[in-house]
Image (tube, rainbow, N blue to C red; front, top):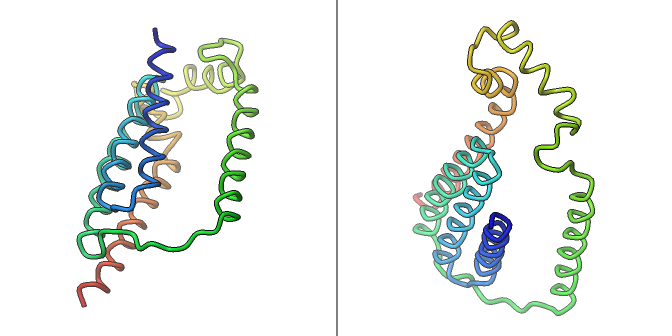
Length: 177
């Protein structure tokens, strides 16, 4: 049953992504992109990665959609038609297929989900369980990992969001002047 849900979610995500890429209406593309981000958030949640799911929902489906709609409101709504060569389309398809094959080959080397003999269960997890309170002073292990051990990761995510926001403001500033 869960495998069927996984396959359905993956199929919906792929359909939304393909439709978002091929539509000429930028508002429609933005809404499809928001739907794609929401489906990804559901996939992350189903994979028991709630922090990534929450971030995807907030940033991907929320903030990014608002920023894109704001930019579209101050610019052209429809993409201009341009002549595309068949060579360019074939090169893009070859690049996508190559990327998919590389990812598929990489997935084979991943440990089975929940495998107690996986490398991260042998090295990282025991250290967190045994030393979290002594190293951080925080009782909740998940909070300690997110706030203390992954602090630089969180700082990086905030920096990316801040940079994107400033970039949009600078782009919109040109339109307002």
